[in-house]
Image (cartoon, rainbow, N blue to C red; front, side, top):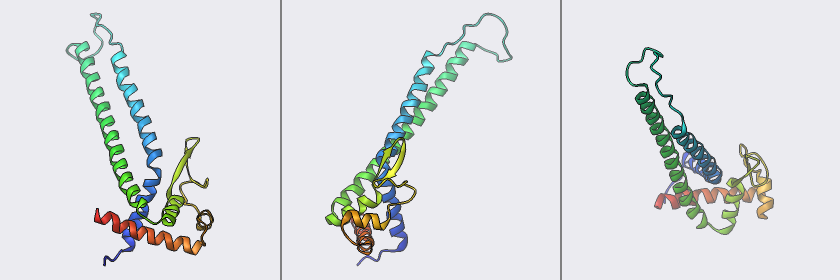
Length: 173
């Protein structure tokens, strides 16, 4: 039988906290991607002044070619940032799917407690737990117990059992 450590439990609780915020975080990262794409595309619309034959500094060479090269560097930097955000979204969604599948294998009451404890939603651009509390602090055990029709002690015990089962199920995958 696999012995589960406190560290494993803490790590699973951190993963569940991330799991509860994935949809909100994905939306925020997609907004960043759109902003980067707009900035990148604005580079194409930027006007490069034509050389007027007058000296304007000490940079030798063709100023138009220099401006084009600078734009290409910026465009490449934007593309790299966009790719990194897309990869981050992919990783978050893979973890979300893995945890969600494991949660669905739990008994129904344990699923309800996990959802009550970790699931969040967005309201006016700020994240809240399902009961309206700030995400910085989870729902109280009394609130979770009331929503799940069990005592607070039972809610904590079922939460611990769910955490242990998730560690075992994900460890087998």
